[in-house]
Length: 397
Image 1 (tube, rainbow, N blue to C red):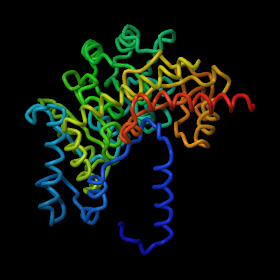
Image 2: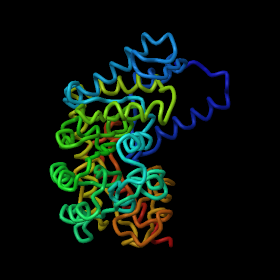
Image 3: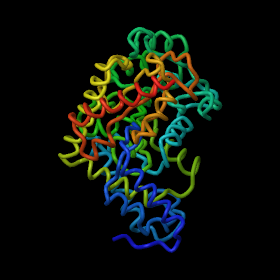
């Protein structure tokens, strides 16, 4: 039994949230459920320790165990993705995905330089150069979009833009794109246009670790990933960079600290180390495969019920569904489902004519429910529930 807190008010709110998480069907593509071991690391005495700097070069004393924990997280990260420590470096201190991307650009892109990224409404992320983000204020975004007919990447168009604009960095890896990315094609475009290739693998990290999604590491210069989505760890980020004469790793380390933050959250880094250890087990490969099977089954079942799935399906843990085509906005759909205990998020669809505040679709992901043991039969039943709830909402309008 958990020890009672002296602060009853916070304890009650935590109990309510734990009950909410237990009772709902969680289809948020960015969320997952960590193990008890990860939670134990997060709530450990490491919370008390300040550790500015890096292993072997701290600004405070008392870091013997801290150095060992951080080095262990780095070692496990490289091993999980099959990377040689002679060829790759990994920074485990960045607090989350957005500051991790910011650190890469701060280190490698001159102020005012060009970041070429997929637009936000097409499935890109704010930190891929969008004007609402600092990445779009300190640097210029060179935007690219999907093919309007197929709703997938068009490498000929991407190449044409890159050869015209000659960006400093091309960003691939997205927040709402459901298809396999051709890393080789992007590497060729980056080489031809003189750009660095930066991969944001935040959403697909666990699928890569599980061997279900092609690895970007043979092609990328830098790779960022969050640890709290398909990788099933605490909220944090990893920044991988090649070790060569360009010294990306040294520049990125300096951008993270002291450039953008002070002391790292060592309890989170310990939790990341635990999650990386868990992801290296054979059962994680089974989990990753089930995540994709569940997403494909759910998407297909919803499509059969008359809902348009963007690009016609998914190769990953997530997909976008066009709700406006059937007469209900993304916000209304999300709200209606939440009232019945199914949590999704409203989301723009490619070439959306509606506002991001109330867009034309929803984003659905299966990583969290797969962690809870759901299988393809559950997804078929879930499609029935989603369809029934949304059809009722449409009739009530």
